[in-house]
Structure formats: C-alpha cells, structure tokens
Length: 105
Image 1 (cartoon, one colour):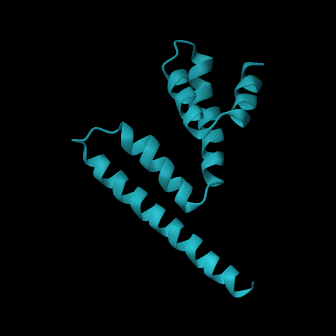
Image 2 (cartoon, rainbow, N blue to C red):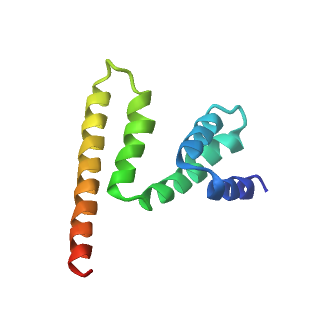
C-alpha cells in the first residue's frame, strides 16, 4: 500500500517536488521510507529526467543541483559547466529544428 502511494504521487509531483520528497524520505527513521527513497523515488525521478530535452535537463541541473552546492565546493564548478553545456546544446538543437521547420512552411 505504501509503495503504491509513492508511485502514484510520483505521477503528479513536479521534478523539484520529487527531489524534495526523496530527501525527506531518506532522512526518515522508518526503513520502508528510506527504501522508497533509495529505489522507488529515484527510479521515478530518473524516468522523468529522461523525458526532458537537453535544455530542460540543463535547467534542472542549474536550479536544483548547482543552487544547493557550496560555493567553495569544486563540484559546483563542474556542475555549472555541465549545466551550461547541456543548456547550450538544447538551445542549439531547438534553433536548428526551428530553421528546418521554416524551410517547409
């Protein structure tokens, strides 16, 4: 029952809400909730991330990951560079698709 509730909630939550739910469940004293966070919620989150284009994924990386890292951490520089590259690639692809679509209009 508990697992079913988690999976159903995963269908309605936004990506930031899924991330927050996973963080909350990981800190739980209830082993089943920690299990849900480790396996179920992370799987739901991964599936939702796979549905995103490069630009949207870069935005999630920038807003949800980079913003929570310490300014002094080297991981911040790596994450910011990755987010910038993914966003640029996504914007370039969107621009390329728009140019191709205009040719057919």
